[in-house]
Amino acid sequence: MSNFIFGRYLPLNSVVHRLDPRAKLMLSFFYIVLVFMANNLVTYGILIVFTLAAIFASKISLGFFLKGIRPLLWLIVFTVVLQLLFSPAGGHVYFHWAFINITQYGVVNSGYIFIRFLLIIMMSTLLTLSTQPLDIATGLSSLMKPLRWVHVPVDTLAMMLSIALRFVPTLMDEATKIMNAQRARGVDFGEGGLFKQAKSLIPLMVPLFMSAFNRAEDLSTAMEARGYQDSEHRSQYRILTWQKRDTVTWIIFIIGFAAILAFRRW
Amino acid sequence: MENIIEVKHLSYRYGKEQRPALNDVSFDVHRGEWLAIVGHNGSGKSTLAKSLDGLLPFTEGTVTVDGLELSPATVWQVREKIGMIFQNPDNQFVGATVEDDVAFGLENRQVTREDMIPRVKAAIEEVGMHDFAQREPSSLSGGQKQRVALAGIVAITPSILILDEATSMLDPLGRHDMLELVSKLRRDQKLTVISITHDIDEAANADRILVIDDGQLVQEASPAEIFALGEKLVDLGLDLPFTAKLKAALKKRGIEPPTNYQTMAEMEEWLWQSLSNT
Image (cartoon, rainbow over the protein chains, first blue to last red):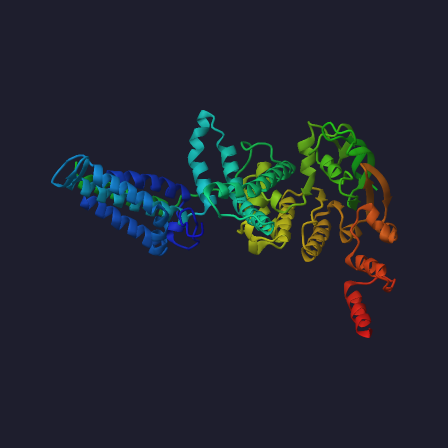
């Protein structure tokens, strides 16, 4: 778990860190659109420069991003190999055996897929490394606000998300404590076959769930005592402010978008 | 003296249980006093505290808080007047950071953001947590979390503070700091304090002590009268001070400790001396 970079926050002081989470979330989606628009050397080149520039601006060392890719490496290799072996015929055929075709088209395509994976993972790693989970939650619920029109309980969902995030470290601590207590009673975690490992999780999960329910009960009493009635009729302490740098970043992305539109193979 | 809370013939039963958790309890709380409620685990003292804030719908009796009789219609008005701190520091921390948590009560009351910012800041300063305003709860100690809970109450300026075993999960130092802070807030904010407790120091801070046993009010006395009971304190559900426990254990082994009241340091000194003599 400890070398799993994706989904972790790295507190630094950079332009990327200071961007509005709403801007970052929307740009991350927009970036994926850009990645799928790119289809030749020039456009991928533009994207690579773009991504490296964003990473550089975040002051986070490249090593973190490479570590972020590692857990997903097998997925990437699998997809690339699949693409390489089973692409439809096109261009020069390098190798042919039964239903396996390695063609020029396949080689180029699998190369692009590889780069696509790499770029998307790097950018989403940048989002999570440079944005606190809480800010992502605030950003998401702010972006979901229009859904109020179709009666989605956005405020309640936002409250649930924020409480869930707040209790992650608390429950992690608790899980560690329970594991240690059960180890002292002779339970082996992470030993033996799959079935045995799954079975050893029962003495962890049962007390963890019980305590989580107790906490939930306590928390709801405390919230009620502090005047919580429902999520709709509340004012907001934490608000997001869209700043000039957010607009500027958007403009840069739109210029990138225009460049990709101009140079892509139609 | 004026009564801020009047409880008359209060009874409460959990679910279908035969034995009532509270059985015909009546008492008054005077404005500005510090009232301690002591009793064994399961004696009904926490049930009593929750009933005062309308967190449990009691079956019989009346509770009047600052002139308002508690009912489903008035419960939110009553909660405006009462701030409550619970036992587990983690399970009452709602916000993602200290600031957010202090703001929680204000958000519920739909205070505008312009009003909230100075009130949150002042409340955090009042409890001495200004260096921690941006911190997340996981990086705070239990005592610090309880301070934040106090700040959340200071921000909404109630007239009554209920501590429901609020210090029982803290270490001795955290407990001491917390009680000192409550004393200070009580002076500054003119609070009436009701503390439900096992802790003898917390009970000693009180002007009056109520003893609850088996859902009934069995005694009402001043701290001096209660503490004169000596080892019988344990029967009331109070933890003996550590030195008293030590003395009892020594007596059992046939060692006669000095009978006068001793501080921890004096006791240590006496122990050292008697040990080096033998």
